[in-house]
Length: 382
Image 1 (tube, rainbow, N blue to C red):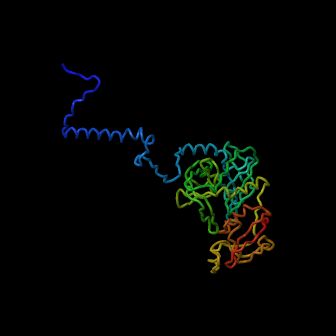
Image 2: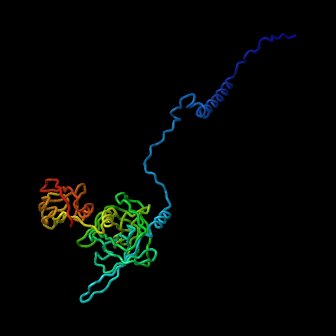
Image 3: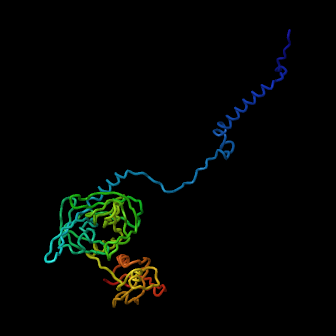
């Protein structure tokens, strides 16, 4: 009878394994190890019980450009701007007398304008009201009303004018900041192209360029204009150029005849001081320095001389008892700045002076024979 020892486990002697068994074991161990490193360790161990190996660390690449582009439905934006602004756009019809040899003929004109104050103040172009020569001015509103307009102020050089009608509680356009305009931004024009049959036509495009200059005629250049490809045609003159929030950023003034999609607008910031003073006092009083002058390049070309100044305006003649006379300016001085505003031309200087009032003080930077100096000046009424 067999004897058993119940107090211990009996293990039979090991048998000698063949090399095949070792290979099988190695394969199984490799598979288990791979599974552990590929799945178990990353999911349950790395970052918890043991550090995450560098190979599993995610390095987020830096942004190529910090500008975030948010797509919008452009048609909805244009519709919203039109809904907000179209009631503030008016039609302006005029009658001018044109002289032909022995008689005069009444000539009708059509343009646009934008309401800038609820008490009937309307901004438009100077050329829309014939640069002050219109015999009759009529303003047409969205609701069909027509009121007689009265010219309060105009400047043919800037091509801007303010017309007043006897009305109250009119819808008013919101004025934006033209200094913040950037190339590529949306631009929307509203006006009366080609006559009153197409009143308050809305066109859209983008801001194509800034600080543009265009030659209006032989003697006149308009500077610092906003260029847009929003369609602008005769009759759009005086209407607003708006941004995507419905703010007026410019007053449409001209387009090129030789190309398409090349329209130009006057920045609204230029005329803001004029509007404010006209609303407050009923008129706008221009200040002046008191000299006749010319751009450096023009003067050098006409007189065949070399002035020791790269830019600015040359003082040719001083008006007696003017601010220039009192400040001690001399002929051949070159004015290169008014306070911090660079002077590049006579029209540019005139625009700068719109920011000053009667009695205001400023500092002129002048170039006298190559020497730069500062001259204080107190402005008087023109």
